[in-house]
Length: 166
Length: 355
Image (cartoon, rainbow over all chains, first blue to last red; front, side, top):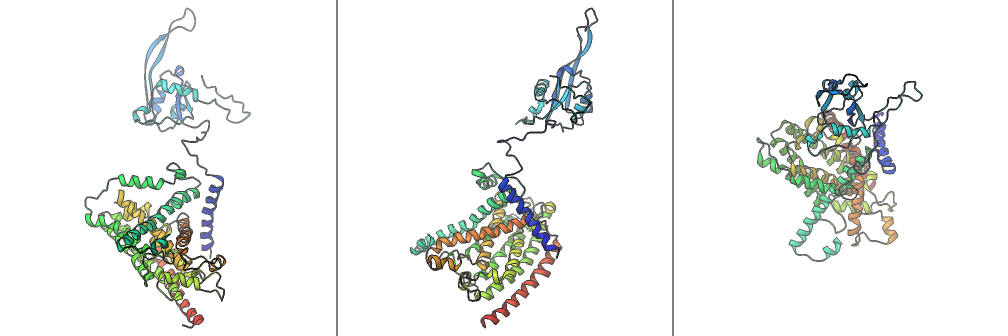
């Protein structure tokens, strides 16, 4: 008769959970009224630090969804030292991420060689119109303020944590 | 309250209107309460969440919101469906629920009809829903619906038998088919000469009670027996093609029938609207007094809530049977046990009372 105790055990399990929820409250959070704190490295939204971007197009090419749109032009910047030649740099005209296509894989952040893209844990940017989910470079730049500082991978590690450009 | 109302001699039409309103209350009240308490809240707590919280205080008006949503939806008929039959099917299912409510006694005078063949009527009428479900499955012109309808028909017929046979034990013991008389038999019964508790038939007919509850679970196509609906394989069984109001009627039919069957089980096994005689002796209340027309419905509601709690508790705990396991369980386990139960009850009845 291994069958009956198993059946009773199952009933006991669900009843225990019921009692636990009645006494201690639920594990879930009533979202619009109270908000859960996401983990500091949670993948909420991608922020752009515009000064670091060289419009090298690596992120746009690696993006599996092709949801990053970059346009830029070559321009001359003033020389670093007095009397030098003016430098040729890429000026960013357009940097859009279409969050209606993005699947939050983070490859763009990984692949960026100049540390222009960062993860931010913010997640409340839903829109009534799907077209509004296309964030342009000013909007992406605004997310920079919400990017948390990097922490060392483990306490007391030799490798210093990278700094988030502000 | 009902007694006071029934004491006044109403003309036929107004008492009929009153009864119709009360039947509506008896059918829809338990459905609403159990859906909110158990389907919305209990299952949520069992999964460590709170369930609907926004509509009304603590989500209590969620069901009204759902009904309003369903009423607004388009009433879709599949192109190849048999329109008349398709439209009628939910009404047939709901009809069986309403007819079932008619015979349940809620107090000495608070009852709709005092049929001498109440048990027979209730069990006969409860199988009308099979026809409605078959109609729905067959007329939908969808293979999921057809499979669901056929499975439902096979299952409901298979579990009708153990249910009837389980009730026969009670009928033998009470010596009557009248549900009201069965309640009185439980009030006047004695446990070896001790009449303080009456004799709720669950004590002597425990096997019958278990079979009855299991069969009710199957009749309602609740989870361990939900092969006809089986959302993972049949979409939604015989309800697949229904939408809006008609889907809502199937939904109400399912949950209202759960409440009515719980009422029926409490009448047959738990002493119905009565409370144990030692309490009535203590406060000096007669079972025939008008007070019981007020207390009775409350007592019935409490018993109904207890039984439906068990129904939904089981529903939200177990996985479902396979089709052949389900049939084997009815024909090879429940029916033989029920038959033995009848034989034993008959022998003991003769042995103890000699009649």
